[in-house]
Length: 306
Ligand SMILES: [Zn+2]
Image (cartoon, rainbow, N blue to C red; front, top):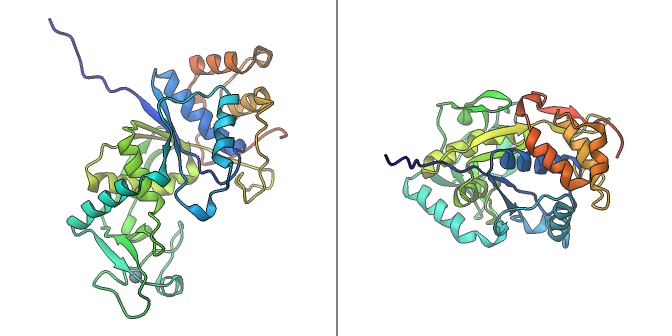
């Protein structure tokens, strides 16, 4: 009897923005996505989200690659660079246009804030240009039409998430007035191209995920599984980031940081694991990776120094 089955192979990814060196918060996403992929015999792909030229810092991408290597986080295949993906993003925009789901918007930020009710996730675009551009500025963004049906998905850690995009976000931007493709569209097109089956990333992106699922549905792309990890906070309760002056991780001392990341993710590495070096630590972590041990919350204070 022919027993060949079509098995879906796990494909995960890490997608840093080269706006600075990796800090503890970005290492949580890197290590978490790596362990989840490798513990399931999967592949772990890398994507540089260098979409926004003014924010890209020279040398940051190289620095990120070197840091990942120092931590033993080897990626599979070629690195994808968003800055080289303009044609693919344009093709997706054309497809949505063909479905009459895209319209131009020349509203200023001021006009939107004056007419928006706002929501917990920020300003809601109230659809001012749905029926045609209004007078004023020539340069315009492109927005996608949304509707009142909720987008519902089950996050592997955070549980069921539901969002009424039209009510809570509004028709959102796919291409900005300065011609840059919006993050939401780029991510969806790239996850499709890289055939990502599982997205593991920080919960600071959780509010964006329904928008990405909506675009996947419109573009006929497969929907990945999602796992949103707690975001690391500093002692002042702020998200670790370049803006909050989070310290870069020290690529020369990966053992210490890796230990802290494993503890942050609720894993229970034996204390003497640290003397075994980074490779043995990672091997242990892959073998013992348990998503059920991660704290089910969106934000979590980082313990310990560094
Ligand atoms: Zn508008």
